[in-house]
Length: 395
Image 1 (cartoon, rainbow, N blue to C red):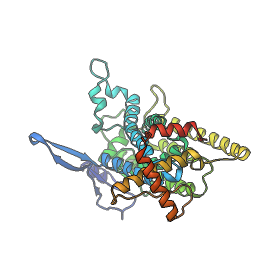
Image 2 (image 1 turned 180 degrees about the vertical axis):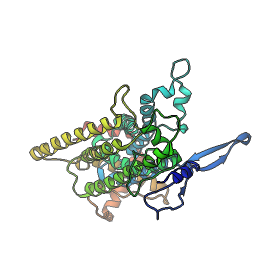
Image 3 (image 1 turned 30 degrees about the horizontal axis):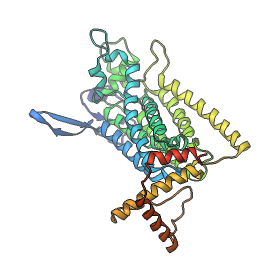
Image 4 (image 1 turned 180 degrees about the horizontal axis):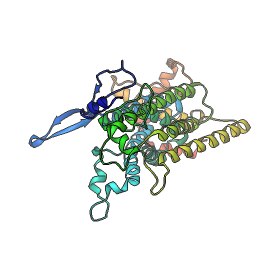
């Protein structure tokens, strides 16, 4: 970059440039972190940000994907959806709490206490991915125990969904011009007035103003948000196809997820200039967590592979518990369909991708007789039936 070009960039706002790739947006790419504005009361308005929209959109895609594969893992769709929704709530709480803990000085009041108003003001920014994963696991795990959802296949499903959400959500950082890395001369390096300011004072913390001669040599950054988005996309594609044909035990996909994401986050975090640090240390929190996740993943994967070789394996969808819960779910769906003929009936799919067989006349008669018996008897609650299953033939 030339000095004149640096001055031109510094005089513009919300324009992204790619200086080492002239054909890619030669006049820069105009962006706005506000997606649209909603008129509100008393001549006020509410801004809807791209960051929030993309996170929500990523969550929605993850939920849609999970809903199509619940039965493949032997999970009751109704109970599993409760776990997923609680995990989403926990993810938001965890992401915020994680960020606040490691940026505590930004959320202290003048009196020295914690400013709750600032902590709850999520619209001002400040969410951390690892905090979101931890929060989702805690909240989702609690509800999984309450709703009697088997945790290991649930975690496999969660790992795949998290990769989708992280892949999409990271693009919110692009619109906010954040989560970029150190200086680079690679063709896809990006810059803007905000990035030049951030990089300049990262490398020259003692300066009080920008010296353009210095800025021209350090003002182009790694698009770390893009690296992480592509890493998550690749991880999702690999684990999605692996989970269909080669999964060896329940929980394997989740262990692969934390290993894959941890390995990528470790090297990407090394490039970033806006990392959270352990207080009073030079260590980046996310790098430490990422490295620990990789180590944890490798150890547990090896342990389980050795155990399976010695003792064999059984997937949850093969157990009597899973089959019984899915049967109960199907019966509820059939009963609902009889009451409302326009309602769509879910297909009963377990592990194999087979077409559902058409019921014979004898089977239909049995179902009708069974339905008549059920209507004349006092039905047991869903929770009581689940308890009987768990105390009976559960493996």
